[in-house]
Image (cartoon, rainbow, N blue to C red; front, top):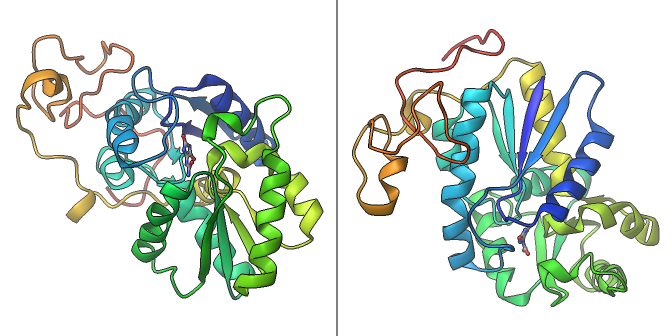
Length: 278
Ligand code: 2AL
């Protein structure tokens, strides 16, 4: 099977690191292709970044449908564009916050999230509410290190994460930790070694979840809320995203311009594997 791991920010070194961590956990026969959009913010650290990262992300999902991917991971802890991506995709789409919180909720009675900047703490709480995880989420803590500083040479990020996790374990009543940024993926094993409690990285958790769903031949429901977007013509710069409408300059199915979405195309790609519905 083929899983497309989409880092919605444009920083390629982060994308490559995530791809490496994901490939280390998948089964033989599962291919992980890690990509970033060609347009958008280099890091996602607020609602504005998240909103403007979403068109590029959706273009990657739509391109992935033409390329016959079996499922997708949205590899940013805000899970930007998750439900919109489900409208476009045939296979399962999982966000890393969603995956990490669900995994942590079965590993311990309560978990704390340790994220990057304080300004993203409320975003993580909103996600916990959306996923019904407030029963398990004891706290959302921040280390106040920017996303792109996490892997800088000499960065104190690992030490700061471990220290904040220790506070979470001592003060929050948490028995597991959720790492609150995709840029923390490659630090996960070291943090877990230092703490001796479950430390869940959403990138690997989401990849394994998608892999399991695809192996079970389960896909996104194509009736109701996650049906393909309704055909309509969008205005201005977004004309090329118009669902199910051929617009000048828009990619047409089979002759795709990389990074350009054609949501709602009536020419669906052939299914990569047989499904039980849809
Ligand atoms: C993130 C993330 O996972 N990727 C990114 O660019 N920003 N989230 C975060 N809380 O910093």
